[in-house]
Amino acid sequence: MTGAFSNPQPVTVTGYTDEVMEPFISNDGNFLFFNNSNAVPAATNLHVAKRINATTFSYIRKLSVNTDGFMDAAPSLDRNNNMYFITTRSYNTDHKTIYRGIFANQNVISANPVDGLAIPLPGWLNMDAEISPDGNKLYFVVNQMGGPFGAPLFSFIKVGTRQADGSFVHDANSDTIMATLNAAGHNYAPSISGDGLEVYWTRASVPGSGPPVPGSVAQIYMARRASLSNAFGPATLVGAATGFVEGPTITADGLHLYYHQFNSLTSKYELRVLSR
Image 1 (cartoon, one colour):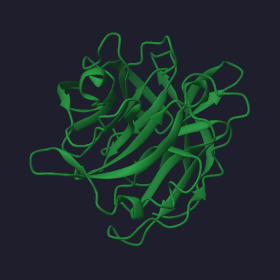
Image 2 (cartoon, rainbow, N blue to C red):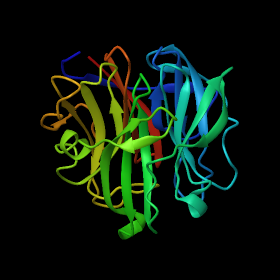
Image 3 (tube, rainbow, N blue to C red):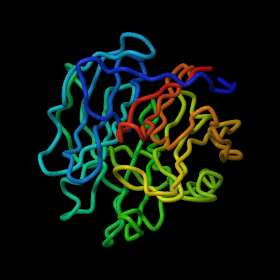
């Protein structure tokens, strides 16, 4: 699916009044997963809502897989209902932040860490991960913390390949495949299209949690490739998403692009959608 996105619209989650960040639309289009604010001291949790139409969802619940006192965020789901998400629950003991559970009965159960991608060095962590629809590729972010305002020094997107035992390894061609994505700025929050030929992500000057740092810029970009074995082509700005915008997620049919946008009037992140 090609063509430009346009017509940004606000998205309502009825029955829910908190902030909406890091959205993900399930492959069947029926569910919206997201987290609330990731700013300290908020308790960042995973939530689920059911689709009414492209701009309206009905809130279901906070997922029971959340952990008190730790961040749980950035959900994604493959076609087999395996949910991947970021959590800091065991980072201090094993440096693992990518977990996998099972989405069943509108909840998530049996969450365990994903092996193979953690970097066992102080200040390094994996953040923002999206699983491919077939469950075989994980597009994830490597951060080295220690920048100003609590932001990372570096944020770049990698590709992991699933192994027979369910673990992932860094794809040998990851740096080549993702070179244009990581060519400038801080790059995070990847979203892969259903056919794997388009990728969307956030590129920022100074990423962080909470309200944007004064003078910082966050925009949504996309890139295409001709086949699954090719590297992605040039980065292209998704210009219809204006303001401080992050966390894109493309629907399986390629017709809608959801993302969160900072509203300076309310000082909250809100959900938006583009169409093509």
